[in-house]
Image (cartoon, rainbow over all chains, first blue to last red; front, side, top):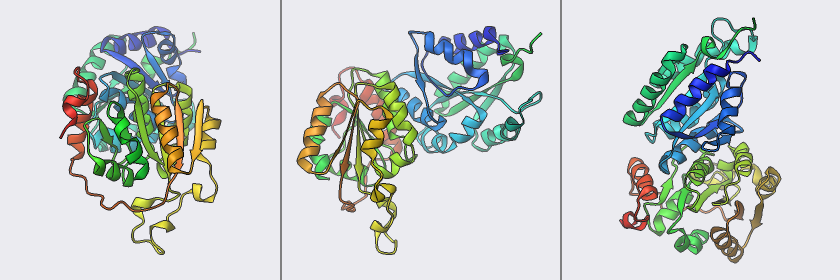
Length: 172
Length: 201
């Protein structure tokens, strides 16, 4: 599977580097290595969700209990979780770090991903959720650190969009 | 209300997460504590918040006070709880078979806004089938009290579905702002001296 193991590791190390010890996730192709890394790491609590909105609640609970967390989700999962993001994170001012795979952008071969891809950024913008793209390995660590800092300073959700360039390696 | 009164003293050292509406108002009316968090929206996510707390503070007992309408909005969450299986979480579901809080002006009164449990959906059965090691249905106050106190003292993920009357609380008034509650709750959970130093208001 041409999902980049090396860059998944860079992202995983960056998440751990900002103190995250709980990750909630729903599998998607680009996330397989990240989720496996969380699963294999005895220092990480992995919550396997049935639906992404639950992860917003799990992260809120972790925050209340003094634990830093992150959500791994696809952009359709983000769209699925909107009510929780509005009704928990935004309403109650709770920091939330979301790592969202940016499916449906240039280069997308799966027709079913293309529609959701069009709305990810407009919906983030509509909710005034600060977001940035992760496309180069060198940017991953500082951007994740900055995102986490802003999430806690602003008591808000923040999003990093995992790009094709970072997560996918075309077979040679 | 009688159910809450029966377990109220045992909630002192727990992290308590309630749903909106009657459950929140009635627990509040018994006496607010800093270790109570009232989720005033986001129906279905009370148990998810409870799961996040339970996994993050394994030595703390977490009690989620849920309702049939909310649980039906997040049935998948029962499978997530069962899969994560935190031994320190008790999931209480008050099943009044209605969406009580919204129904005041409905034709025939609030009892008109029924949920699927009024037509036979068995939430305890669903919890058990989802993989909860313990799930039970209770209909009498004494049975609820025994089951709930047992679960709070115990160390097994437990779901208790309590069939209750669909009665409006005397008042929905809660003199604690959502954000006040949002900030005092983690302070209580994270205070080194235990929760009670912040609990008295």
